[in-house]
Image (cartoon, rainbow, N blue to C red; front, side):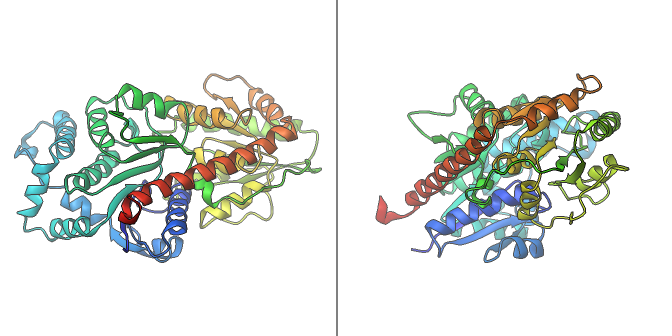
Length: 428
C-alpha cells in the first residue's frame, strides 16, 4: 500500500528557517518509516519547496485558501461598518470549521475549479497532518483558522489527521479556542514540543475524551535535522556571541527596545575580558527590508561581526553558525533551540506572553539552558550580567542538553511511527 499524505505547515512561504527545519524534520521521519510514501506539501513557493524538500509534491497554498472562500452566511460584507468587519470575518472563519459539512457541500456544488481541485486532493489522501509551529495562538488567528479548516475538511471526509511538534497558545480568543478544540479532539495524535503552555491549554480546552487523541511531549521536529552527538568544547580565547532579535508585531520588541539593546551590546563589547565578535543567526528571512538578518546588522552597526558569516539559505546554515558560538542572545524560539541542542547557552529576550511561553517551554525541557532577559523591565548592564551567567554554565550541564536532544529525537521518531502504523492495515 502506498501512503499519500498531505502536509499542512506553518511556513507557507518557506522563508522562515525554523518552519522549514520542522518541515524537513517531519519529512525525514516519515521517509524513515515509509520510504515510498507520497508527500504533498502546501506552500506558496514551488521552487523553494523543490530546493528545500526534494521529492515532494507541491500544492499551491492558493488552492485551499480559495476553496475556503465560500461563505456560509450570505451577509453583504461590503455593507457591514468597517469597525465590525473583523468580527464578521472571525465569525465566518469559525463556522467554516464548526459547520464543516456545510462548507464541504458548498465546495461540491461550486463552479470554482479550486474547490474541485482541493476536494480531489483531500479525497485521494490517506491522511492529512499538520507539522510543527506556534501558530495555534491569538497572534496568528487567520493562519490557524485556515489550517484548522483543512484538518476539519479531512476529518469530515473520514481521513485520519494528526498534528506534530506543536507549541499551543496563548489562546484567549473565544472563537479560536472553540475551533481549535473542535478539531484537536478529533485528531488521532497530538505531539507537543514542550511541557508548559501546550499541556495547560489542552487541559483547559478538555481535549482528551476516553483516551483520545493520543498526546505526547515529543520535542520539536527540527531536532531531527540537528547534528548527532555534538561535542562540547572548551571556550576559545575569543568569545563569539550569536544574535537573533525579531522586530515584529508579535515579538514585543519595538524600535526603542532595539535601540536600548544596541547600547547594551556596546557595553558588552567594551567590558569583555577577551576579544568579542558577534554572529547573526537569522531565522525569519521573509521580508529583506525587515527580517532577522536586517535587524541583526542594524543593531550590530559599529560592532565586530564574525568574518566568515554568510547569509543562510537553509536551516543547516544557521545550525552550523550557532555551533561555533560560545553563547547566543536571541528573541527567536528556533535560534534558541538550534543553540541549546548543541550545548550552547542562551540569553532569551522576551517581551510578551507569547515568547515567555515559548522560552518557558525550552527552559523546562533543557534545565539551566536559558537565562531570561526582559529588555522592558531591565536596567543598563543587566544584559551583560545575563550573558556572564550563561557563559558560566558548567560543561556537564551543556553536555546534558545534547543528551536530552537525542532522547527527544527518539521520542519524535516513535510518535511518527505510531501514527504511520495506524495507516497501515497490515499492522491493525
